[in-house]
Image 1 (cartoon, rainbow, N blue to C red):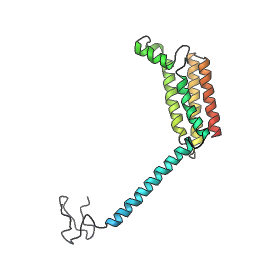
Image 2 (cartoon, helix red, strand yellow):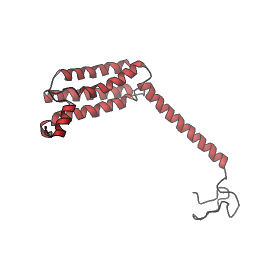
Image 3 (cartoon, helix red, strand yellow):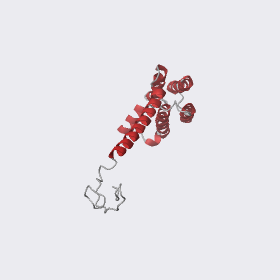
Image 4 (cartoon, rainbow, N blue to C red):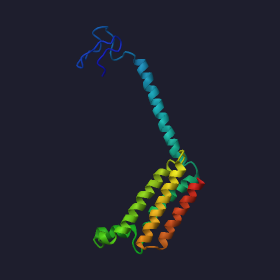
Length: 184
């Protein structure tokens, strides 16, 4: 609370609890109440407009048309494709179950584990960046994240040596993402 009277400027003790100023007698709580309420209403209006603008950006970037909805669903398919055997017979489900049951040691599956973790993190980055596609640099940001995600996925797939059908399916999903970015 302000330690001065808003009308006369009298300095008040921080422990002063009365409602009226001892010098001029003005009510400290209700002085300029209308102006304060108008200022609060204006601040609230600006905050609501900012939230509405933010929500409109997300809506126009993700669910404004059927193509955008298809693109949004497409972003989750690389995560789902990891449940299929991606690197030889290693899938995300087999990897997790093998580690939980003690059938696999982390040292024997470290590269597939790193690859799958990077696919998850980078796919989430692509999903989050796609929510802001309609901003000024949205398209460029989407393409950069998608290129990095694809390069990391393919690079680790080649290093691990697990070039199989699921790797090509996931790679085709990433290529389809590029096409969807260009269309959208």
